[in-house]
Length: 173
Image (cartoon, rainbow, N blue to C red; front, side, top):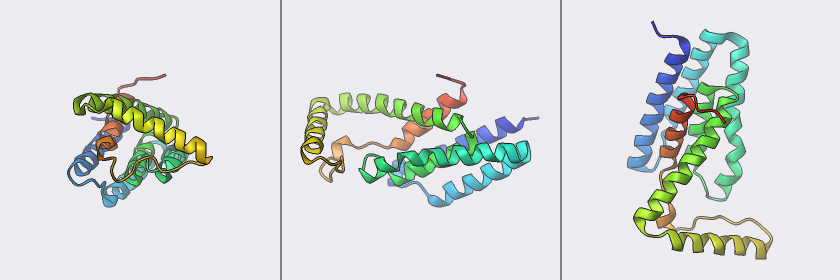
C-alpha cells in the first residue's frame, strides 16, 4: 500500500505533466487543472497530516507569489506562477521554495541549451545588455520580452516539471 507522500507525489507529477504538455501544445496552462490540483492537494494533505500540514500547504502554495514582479516585467507567465503555486500546495513549506529555485536552475540550463541549438547566444546576451542599459538609463524597470523576441522564449513549465522532479528526488541545498 502506498503512503500519503507517494500518492501526493504521483498526483502532482501527473498534473504537472498534463500542464506541461498543454503548455507545449497551446502556450497555455489550463486553470481548471490547476484549480483541481489545489483542491486535490488540500484533501490529500488534510487526510494525511491535519491542521499542521495544512499550514505548510498554505505557505507552500503562497510562496511562489514572490515571482509576481517577474510576471509584470514579462519574464515569466501567469500560468507558470500558478503552476508553481499548485506544486507548492502539494510540496508544502520549505520544499516549495526549493522547487522554485530548482525550477529556475533547470530553466537556466534549458535556456542555455536552446540558445546553443538556435545559434542565438550572442544576440540574446546583446539583448540582455541593451535591456539592463535601458533600465539603468531610465531609472525604472521595463518589460524584458518584446513581441519581436520570439527567439528568446521557451516553455518554462518544462523547467518547472524538471524542478519538481529534482525536488521529489530529494535533492537538497
